[in-house]
Length: 273
Image (cartoon, rainbow, N blue to C red):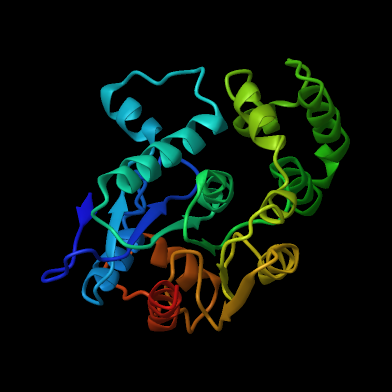
């Protein structure tokens, strides 16, 4: 969806890249309707900034009932690059900025190498996905730590393994392994260090999925970046006053407003390029 502000001839454009899983152009998944990305796009539009947001390619495949098992992490990057090249060629926009949310942060970092005026990371990890998985397993299911290490080592060699506990099926099923191996190749902190463009790195202090430490590490690795940690903001841009239960429930509460500090920071960043 391309959203352009009224009465603006050559506005700045942001291309918004969604997070992990089957995330659609509005930031929603099957049972999680929060419209986070849609709300961000609408706020930007009312402040004179155009935006393009799109369904991840897996969303269309799920809707058609035909999921392509050979889908790779690099496919997400080439989708973002295709959108970027299309809008650059159109000549209808002034500055073009990529915004990556969650997994989309790494996608955006890699796509930015194709030439863009600025990059915004929201809730992006600084670590490679194998590191993230290992830490999650150590924290939530330490008895599977050694099994996890073994699988990750095999994937690093470019091989597939059938030797893993059933409990790890959701992350290491044979169908997923080539995708994971492709994703693991990238260390966000290393990739972001190659970019010379202005960057804004954002994280909320109530993000249940990505800690503020990740944003701090990404920002330290980036050459030309500004770090913004938003008090009480969660993973889907909402301010949470209460506990983790309220936080989790908000993922399916589309009536909630997104953080004004978030949208204002992005507006200021884009307009300042």
